[in-house]
Structure formats: C-alpha cells, structure tokens
Image (cartoon, rainbow, N blue to C red; front, side):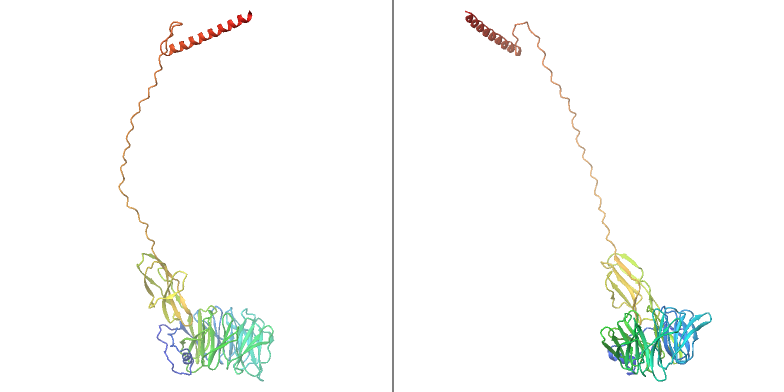
Length: 498
C-alpha cells in the first residue's frame, strides 16, 4: 500500500479546461471549488485499465473489472491483498453481502459465479451469453437470489436476462430492445432501470411482468444510480448529469462532461461523479436535490470505476491507464470533546480538546448548541482546541470534520454547565442568657374557720340570750295560741250539748 499523508499533493485548478467536468460544473454553480478530501491510502492493484468496480456491502472486498485483463479482488484492510482471477476480456462485476461470492460478465464467456476458496476464487458455474463490448449491466438483487445481466447478439439484438444466482439457470429474458446497446442498470424495488446510450433513453423494466413500464428521454445516458429511498434516478450523459424524479417524472440537469460513473451517498445528500474526459482526473461532488456543485476530489489519473459501501463509511475511486490504483477514502473519525463534562462558575474559562483520525476531510469546525437544539458553527474556531467561558445555561460543544465525500462528521460533544450557587450558611448571633423567673412566695395554708362553741343548755323554761332566747319566745307564742284555740273549741262543744 502506498500511503498518502498531508494535504499538499493535490493540484488546484480554477476554470482551466472549460470543456471538463469540474469547469462546467463550476460555471453552472457560479462558485469556487472547495478544498478537497484526500485519500487515506492508494493501493497498487496491477496492470490494465479499470472499467467497472463493485464493493461488498460491508466494504471488506473490492472487485475490479478491467478492459481485457480479467478481474481483480482487493482486500483493502488486510495487507492489502490483491488477487487476479476470472477470464480475460472486458466486462463488469457485481457482489452483495457475501465477500466470498462475485458475479462476472465477460465478452469471452458470458456470466459466471465465482467463490473464494483456500486457493483463491474459483468458478462455480458459467452461463453463455452473446456479449457485446459496452454492455455492462450486471446487477445482483439485494437478497442475492437473482442476478440481472444484458446481452447483445450479432444481429444487434439487446435483451436483459434474469439468472438464478445459485445455479446459473436463465429464469426469463426480456423483449428485444433493438440494436442499441443496453449500458448500465440499477434495481429499485421490483423495477430495473436501464440506460440505452445510443437510444437516448432510460428504460423502466418490471422484474415481475417483464414489461417496460416507462421510458425517459435523456441524451446519451451511460452510468446510473438511484437515491437510497428510491425516489430519484441519476444518470450521466455526454455533457450532463440528469436527475429524474420517479414520483413526478420531473427532470433536472447539471453540466458534467462524459460522466463515467455516478454514486449516490447512503444519506441521500450528495452525488459523486467521475468523468471520462481526458483532462479530468477527479470526482465531482454535487448536492443530490439541486445538483448544485459542491467541490472536487482529485486523483492522479482518470477514474475508471467508483464504489461506496452501503453504510457510507468508505469510497473507492479506481484509476487505470495501464496501471490500476485504488484510491481509498475513509470516513474520518472525530474524537469526543474533552473534558466530557465541566461545571464551573459563570464566566470561568474552560479549554476543550478533540482531534481527527483520517485524511478524507477538507476542514475542521467547532460547533455549539443548547442541549437538544440545533448545532451552530462557532466563527473562527477551526483548530483542535476551543476556549470558552462558562455561560449561565448549559452548552454543548463538538468538533466537526467537514468532508466533501462524507458530509459533516461530528464527535461526541462536551457539556459545559454553570456550577450551582452554594446555599449561604447564616452567621450565628450571641446566645441570649435566659432571665430567671422570680420564685413565687410559698403560700401559707388558709386556716380552717373555727366553729362557734356549742352553747350549753340552760335551766328548762328559762330564756336564753342571743339566738337561743329568740327561739324560746317563738315556741312560747305558739304554745299560747294553741291553748287559746283549744279553749274556743271546748266552749263550742258545751253549747252544742245544751
């Protein structure tokens, strides 16, 4: 592997070569090119001219079809290991989830399945098809059960064939699409979209009914890719990149000269195009929705094939003008901002640090936000350290690596929060000396009243003095009254007796 480090190897261009892809795109967009990503490594592959490239879903193995020199398998993370295999001749290649399996289409054989064994890749089956140079349709269904390829016979009859991926049996063949070569294809759901270069159209072919369901007029279409959500197609032509909205049918074009390959990033945000124009040795990056030109990533030779991993973590640009090299671009890894959490008094200075591993980015940028809010760039903060002052509310900070190929790649944020105000402790006052309560006087017991002396009785019939004398008078009066009444009663009785 030939490692590439630093950021000085790229050549800078303005609008020189007005017929080239970048120049046309710049004229269309009216903006200056951004500083570009750099490859993390350049892998020497072998002799030949790169024609077509496929990458396994996990990005662990890269397959390259050449113009007349057979096929290469590259293990980019293991050595790397480069292995040549398959028939000589021009063709295309497809692969899926299994890095041990690959399907080749060659003008000398037809379509073949290869499996990796201890001795290398060995052919499992081959199905003969009449092949014509320029036919590069080789699409493996996502479930790995069917591979779709195209053929063109000596009478210039072009057809699509569905091949059982396990046995090589032809399951069905399409109608005759005429003498014009079927060039590239992409599968969206149950529809296979085909470019017919000299037919100036994109064809929608149902894999269920095997019938054409729609056509789109595009000048000399060649490469084709689909948006990850299946809402749009992107196809390159002689002088333009065209976006086809599959919902409305609307088409939008941007000037790109002789686009050889087109990729849609898995996040659906960017389109990556390589050109066959002889003075163009770069990847043009455009906005997927508007086709606005964003910038270029340059290589040292014309790019013959491109591939991107399903999760968007790796992009490969394979050059080939006698010597094939694979430019490897890996999504940068941004370290978490440190310290991860800080509490300090408001206005206190705090220094945060982070860093980036990898070369595939153009610049660094610190960002901030209130927790849960939107990230905003901090003007002028583009290094690996950040000095901030503690604010009255918590703030999150992160470092972002800004990449043309991978977009904004952010690290884990650090949180800087104001320290809680301490609860004031009251100053104790002097302890008051309690005033003693006066001792109440001991109460003297209340003397019990002395009963009056009992009067001694005097001689009978004799009056007493005081209270006793009054009682005797009353009794005497009563006695006298009674005697008088008795006398009256006796006199009345005597009279009556007479």
